[in-house]
Image (cartoon, rainbow, N blue to C red; front, side, top):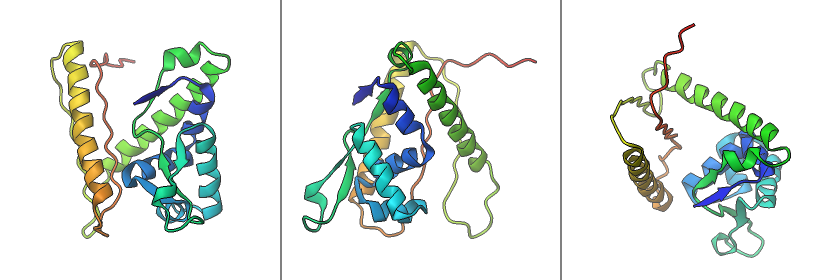
Length: 187
């Protein structure tokens, strides 16, 4: 796991399309720009542009061993776990602004995921939505162990999906949030 503390990297991954590209690569392992374009519904030249931007900041790289031939450009994540260090980022020039952009983008994405999860699924609609919320009494160390355990389970499923040739697999979002219970917003 690599922890990034460069405000420019934070701005790069705050972009919704680039973030989706990272998710697609995480789930698949490696993809061509054309594959990403097809999966995200963006033109192939835009997928290529966003891949080059992510490569510029060391988040993705060309995977020459994954191509069919030397002309076939396949991309992969440099590290499966992208972690950012907010404290170190905001202490750098431009860091507060970059963190603000990243935070707004992340909050908007979280709202979008929750809104979609609570949509009523019509008969015959693809995919299954599962919403689960639990409250646990934990120490900080227990919360850290729980996060590591959940990450291991997610990684196991991610790896199995990468190895599968099943054409019916679709991309699912697993959104984890482990934090002390916030105060009620009384207002």
